Length: 504
Image (cartoon, rainbow, N blue to C red; front, side):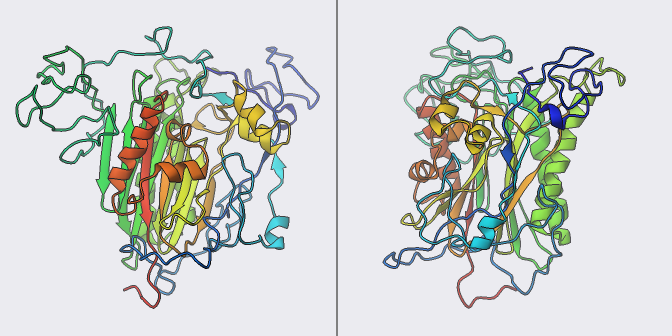
């Protein structure tokens, strides 16, 4: 497992042997565990802005058919409790209330000033409980650490394995025609000179026909496994996940679904999980977390639970599902103090559009971006990473350039897993007043489109109307950039209710 750093003063017991610690200890007196310190991190920011006010000269953009129309009178939610780290319900703001932040947490050029009361109520800096290295280098950097996947060569390349079923995973629905041209890994039902009409083409040579054993009859290349490339489109929401070009398996997972609130208005859900490569069974962890979070939301939203509280509870349910995998490990005796070391782990990020609200929740370094349909308006990142680099920049100990150039930049300080020091779900609620597209993705994508402006530039302009096509294009953007990691993205178009319209 990757190195984990703890803040001594915040630890009642040693992470290695569970012996009591004194505040001044630098090493555990029982086992010698190194109690190194990391900088403090800022608290949850549950009310980041979506977009500033539009320029007066900006032409109006016709609203698309509503995805989650506002229901100010029909949906009466109870007050959300325990929705963030301060155990207080997060207020909801209109998009122009606060300035946005870029990927490093720096303010974006603002068109409207933030209220002084909100600036004064910023959460204090708190101590991060732990740091975990995901063992995935940024593009152009070598892979380091003890968690490298087995079977790699010196360059990190992997041979594709023959198709094999994945237990417990249903195949994703791939529409007629397969993936777009920008996605070199998509397996579609295309035809060409090297194959008969309706036959499956090789993803390597794109000419040979694939036989029943999963190999190309022309070049002999093994085809992707079922989970190597997954696609799903469900009404207004769509997601695509790909193994990438360097990993031997896909450790990401996702869930997209739709349900209805008690008043009959729609609620749309997108969950994306990224397995921690240095952990045991990361692919199972991400699949379990995505399924558990989705199930929790589909159970609580129709019962009238506030979407922000429902998202909080869904992250807790996902954490329990991942923790249960550690208990299933063979030979893990209940009294063994090391049974949770290198336990299955993943990150999680999700979005819910319901009743005129956009609610996001996350643990880890996967992200949510807001891209307005009117591209003259400012896109914004809605989440803040639980990562070493983000904490160093927030604490003022390093510049953004210094922090992200460090080999520890992608070490995460929050994750789901039995070896996580504590569960600290983040949630945020927004009320957009204009249409846009919500981008929910893993770092396999945002490594190649880190700022909100870069993500908006990579997102097709018709993504609001064609979310599956937009998700394919974004995956292709990451693969074209190098595909050093698994890539997963879900697109959730958000449409506001036209003025004067009423639900029901």
